[in-house]
Image 1: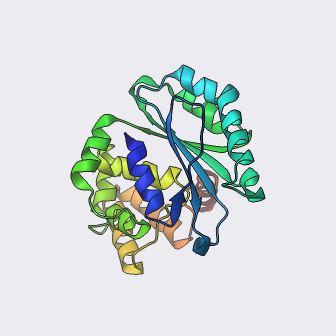
Image 2: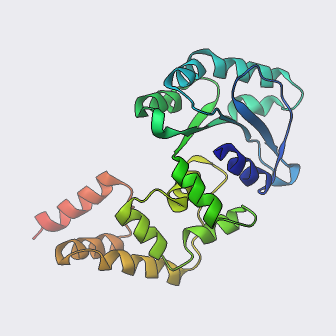
Length: 232
């Protein structure tokens, strides 16, 4: 199960497991940061084989609150737990509808909530391609081992393999973050993206890059393009 990979990521990046007794059918672990990290972030990670929409609904309705109260009353956490705790739910997604996941992640009570949906083929590919310690540094190397070619292939094919699972890990596990390898590497990736565009879109892309636009902000992108082309 994916929870085994996620556990290694935490343990190899400054977290330690603390035993807590929860009344649950989920496989789970609870981790706290080592003192030298100088962080106050706690994580409960859950997974159940063949998770159903009913399992997720019960988590949202009552079980997450029960887990929260149980951990809060134990001697493994301090007062910072209440505002700095996250549940990460790993679930094989072939039998789960998107609405169930959204309801889980949008539930505002007690834990912050993230879900890592995956397919079995992604996990099989991961075990075939990924080896060594799962440190943030090594995970960063997996993102860009070939000056952006892997990322471009992922964006253009949407193939479900170890790389698609890696992207989900970066998005859903807060302690995993991307560190650009070098300015030249970023320019290489930018050039590869540009090469995939036709002449019109390449011109728009160049304009946005020159304007230092946040390409993930749809409103900013639209406003910049409108201001340029309406000014002509």
